[in-house]
Image (cartoon, rainbow, N blue to C red; front, side, top):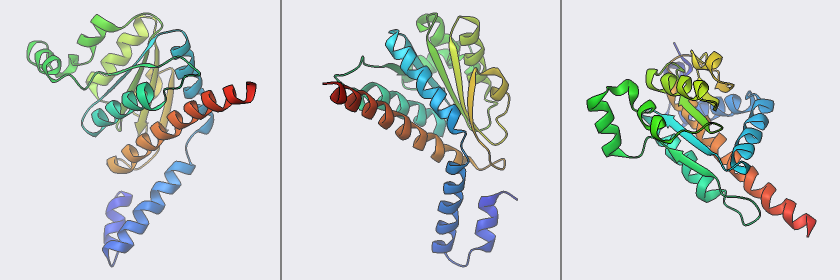
Length: 208
């Protein structure tokens, strides 16, 4: 039984379930590998300053998270004090996704786009709660083979992505706890982008 099922069995009300869920989410957040988060920020910033692109991929809820990351880096983190991020989610173009799915199969949704867009030195962020999504794994392999940097945002035990990415930030939970894993991935988005924007703005202000 995972924690969410246990919370439901133990709770005498919706309010009690809600409290247990939020407390569990808080524990997951405090257990993150914060040195890995710092390294992730460094990799993102280095990619930006070299004029390279950061690609995001994921399925289902993680596809929405990929779009959220691309939006927040390219628009939300924008500052006059630093170059803009070239950030792109490969989950957003429905005609391309359906064409690739129809012609090559679901496993090539992201690789088919990377073949046209990915350049040596670019960065790929794969988002997968299980760490085992075949199309995300294929995208990671493609980026690794073409001179890119790969980062995994995963959950449960990290799956195959944990060993295939250059860096992996894993939300360690019982299998099946998709909601809390995806919650943490979105919190990471806001943490990272708010830090980058503040550092760009306030570092410049301090030097003026």
